[in-house]
Length: 207
Image (cartoon, rainbow, N blue to C red; front, top):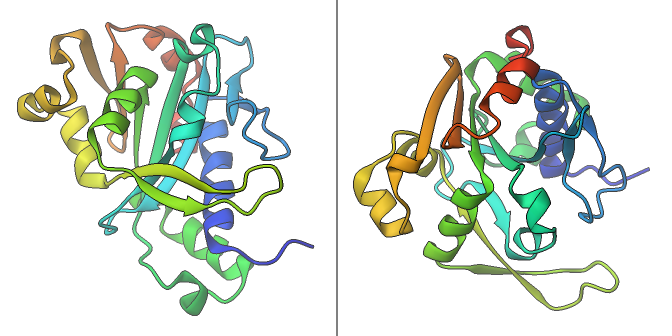
């Protein structure tokens, strides 16, 4: 039995919610990171899932190694989905068991804000924001692995096509199209690429 880890419970919870929301299948079954987390049933697009508290000053983790792992053909169809929930830090103290944490995630699910961005946004954001480092304990992955984080506020700025923020990203906001699939589901595509597929797969009752 795996040791109770609040980040793992939160990550698994929202990966399951997002998979149901867009009718996706989980393909990274062993959590090795060698394939994207989720894939459309027809293979038309892929989704990586991230979760963080709305109140967190850091946010959803973006791993540098993950950004360069896949072929360009996959990256052109890869999205990152961020779930921002209302639960604060100190999860292990406030929710000492996985069941209690999952119950709280379910109870507050109507407060979660979802943002989905194309791969190009994540690459530009990763290059812009200073990197942090975390020791990787897995066998074969020793050493410090670079990562950065995207806060709820930063996700809002990206979705709103904030001119100054996009200038910092060195991206043209005119190339991106925001779409609100639901009052709490914010989708950004590059020139509308795969928007129809996302809409076709979207199930609002699962939000």
